[in-house]
Length: 422
Image (cartoon, rainbow, N blue to C red; front, side, top):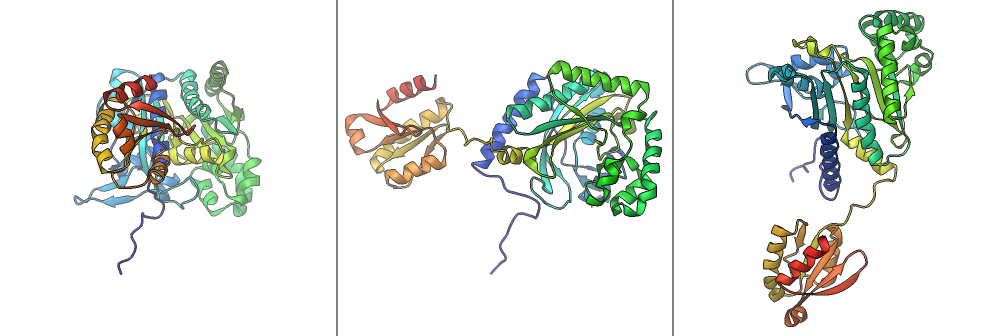
């Protein structure tokens, strides 16, 4: 026998009713971003490998270990999109968006990283994120953070905290790098292998280590805030003031860094108690130098990325994922004659009601069809049998209260249902 086919390791299939939860989240994202004045951008799933090497940074875990890279038939090195910010900047440069002024963009779609699959993490996962470009002011940082905060609050995810830090800029960061090297070098042999390598190339990334052997040394490392230049300190203070004005609670955490080389000044993470040890649910920060590093003008920018799988997992883990809201109508025909009579009504409902309309064409008994209605999460059932046909009626059953109501069968049914929807 041929081997059983299955989805590749680290990927998943999404189907009803789970896909309905994804659609609700995506619809909420579209509505929320629109309220903040953001427009959607869509970029190719694969890009030139050079884009990510230059944009993300050669020392990042993404470039060193996680990218899906291949040569196309023309011998060009291509990479499946491992993150969104560099492609968004590339697209904005290619199409001259930055010449039109500040840009508020958001994205929603898959990314690909070769990493060990674990709860909420996949090799093909999906991200929602925003990029706010053209504003150097700290209020833009707070705007980005507030948008993420609003989404988390809307889903009532328990135990969410916002961790906030500044990692300075090219003026003050070198002094901090030197301080970190001085702190870690005497204990180099005690660090994890990844941290030993990072210490030589980019010591800030040691602070991002989750290895148990690094925990104590990372906790005692010097704080970046003590090394901030006056301009970066003023910017960080401005972000905190703006968040206070927006009513967003935060905790300053000197050890928050980002794993990508393009970040400057503000960095932040939203964490949830519902996710266990790997508790980051959303992260981002400012990246004022990225556009210029990719050959564009000097455009300041700030953004975040949120993993949809981890977000939905947090919703479910926190126990706030209520049963999917019942919606729509299950049309139930008992007998062949009833089915033929019901078909025109089903067609009319599908074209006019705005509800999902379900119907089973098999010759099943009423109880079996009601079970199908529950599986479809229908709100109502319209039941038509021989007796109802003879009486010119159809039964409307409320599938929540389990109560029945007779309705006139035909055009009057449409009118009655329309009144209910209003």
